[in-house]
Length: 204
Ligand SMILES: [Zn+2]
Image (tube, rainbow, N blue to C red; front, top):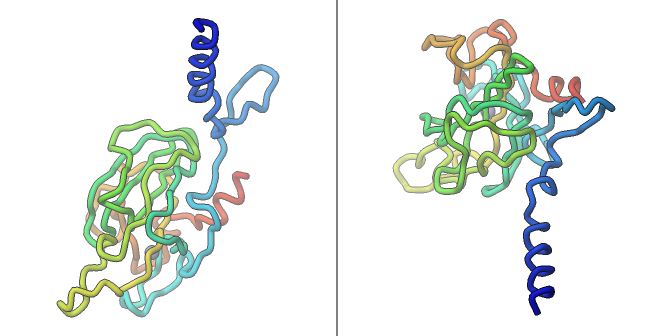
């Protein structure tokens, strides 16, 4: 009986050992140097408003991100290893998370996240592919109710995803250069924003 119990315990602990879940890190070298990979923040990365598109709904300002179709509750993953530099509510974003990726000298930004679902906290270290939050429902994505009717049909649930050179503390201003800018009056590459789709494909 003791042996059976021990086997059972080994089976249980074996199933939940962290080694079995670390598919985020790829050991590619013989000298066991660990190389982190960069990946898309959601499965089925389908862009419906791309980087640097001028949006008539925002006074024809340029979009600093890719807007990606994702239903409410879709898990959102860190694109690479890094440190959560902001996790909190932020105006029209609903819940917003940024991650500084020190190794690559860029940061990533994830907007319209769910407030009521689980999410990482500011200061946490994260690995590439770790679920950091979930896409928001219509009533928590920052759009607000339209015309006071209580209806939240302003925009469809989606992820607003940006990549930028530097770290958020490099951009303290409240102007076009601000760290959480969603749209800019000048082309976003002037402020160090990168095309997220091209950036991730270039790192693969
Ligand atoms: Zn957007």
